[in-house]
Length: 457
Image (cartoon, rainbow, N blue to C red; front, side, top):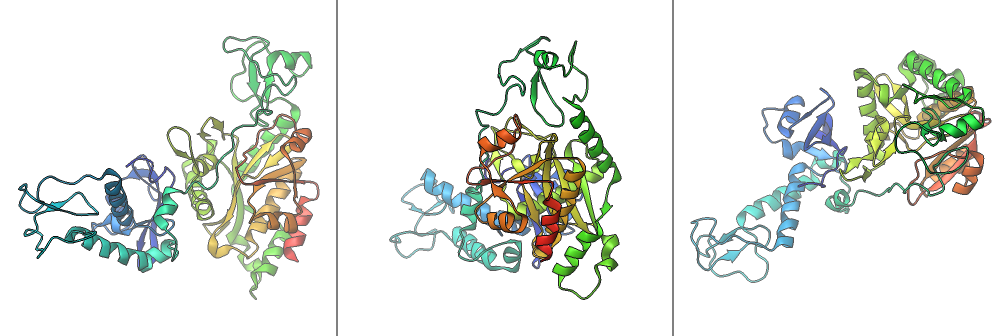
């Protein structure tokens, strides 16, 4: 059935309460992180080292603890109740006649064939559905289901069918158009003064004619490759490429001290310096090795955020954002991903987009559950602060849920800002915004001090 497990849904093969392999729903199959290919559930089971079991649906779980087996059984039940269809022939002898109908599946039975002494009153379930129901109840309480994220008392199936908690807002009608003249008209073909160019760093739009009139650039034809609107954007882009080329980097000493104080352990953080790194990735230009880290980043984000689905094809937002792809007419090619690692494990993640020297945004941040509350996100956030300060970016904005607002406002000094106020600070920028969230802002100049000082205290 389509539109049940959206592309990007995290799936794990579980054994005795331990995940053996992580993948994601993709193209009617599973994107396997061990081979970076889309495989069938049976192949996914084999890649997890359990090909001999031949029961992939019983051991592959969603992030809220539902096995593919339980999901398929439940959907079959719900589909039956909606369709109200039953077979015309007995499922045992294949003959017609007076039949007893199962209330959970399309099967029908003669009273004698079903071994019934009388016609049952009320709801009746055939032996096939009774067996399935027993298996389903077992799945709901086994170690694999609990370890995969099953929460007692919560309708996990309903969570899957109603997973889109965050909805991306439609672009603000005030946003867009030429950053110089504010007009939204443009030439649909050819090259003329009304041809629109988009800066590959700040992503603002400019009419070719307006660039000439303001003395910014005098173009004779559309530029090939990347195009930048000003010297600041050229400098920022060049610096980011340099950061990307460095790969994994050590954390500054002051950041390591924050983690040491929050860790609550006697051992010195100095002993783990070689294992603790931060790194910047860009999905658009990521290598095969980089994509493995980005896949792990998606996994960490999906622990905190249910997949956000949009567009005609039901593409998942978090994955597209991390990998710098298009999503429902929104271009995320300029999105970067900052990652904090311990050994080779991704422990904290933040999406980052730098919209020129005026502003940057952090649409989504998350820390792996077993590393939460130990100062690791504070460390990553401080590294991001260092980066933004070195690029002379003035403002940082992010969308926050009601639950997350106290952390951002009390610990990191963010304050609420309206979209009108943001446009006054940075005209022409386009940010990711979600329904039900509040836009928060803070200047970058004193961001580092707050990120380190408040978390350390």
